[in-house]
Image 1 (cartoon, rainbow, N blue to C red):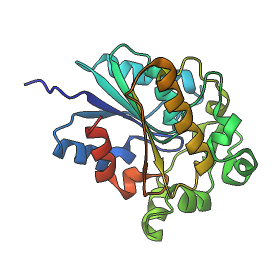
Image 2: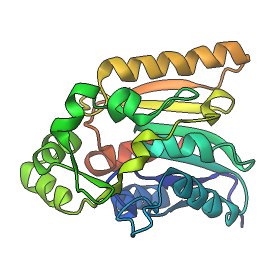
Image 3: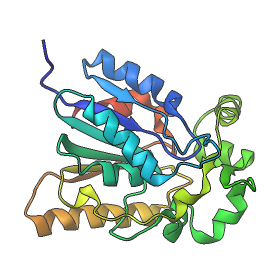
Length: 242
């Protein structure tokens, strides 16, 4: 029997891959919500250095293979990707999970990818071959600050390089401007600043008022930047209710 709920498509952020969603997907299965994910081409890229457009194309192709409506959930840089891929006709709504929610024309680098311009050089390490990594200490303390230290170090060891160019590509027609959207801010986030999260929430609710829709929401959860690890049940609760 076909489920009446949309399929949740989970899109990871920079330096991560599809493994980060495993616990959330398990929690969604328990709630009888179908989910799907992928590893973006810009993660651990080959010599051609696939970037933002290839990431959007990969998510679009995944949606094409799904029967019925889709809810897109993006984390971190994944918010940039779902903002473009969310224009697909099967996408009924979007969830930004501690994610970058760009205005038209805005790039990750314009806000330091959530890090703030002055912090980027100290946290992100170019590899010299068109890729970047986040420094180990920054990963442990800023990505996974609400996990135990040994767990955080284990997760940090799984991170992969990402194509550097993803920081510089502007958003064009972000889908949150015209589709139902939930913005989930993480109260103890050490990547996305509280000011930036509040501004994104204001933009989201303002678009709702100008568009005459009442379906946008901004909520806060008491986690760090990566709640798919620290609170997968809470993330699944949010996603199963969209």
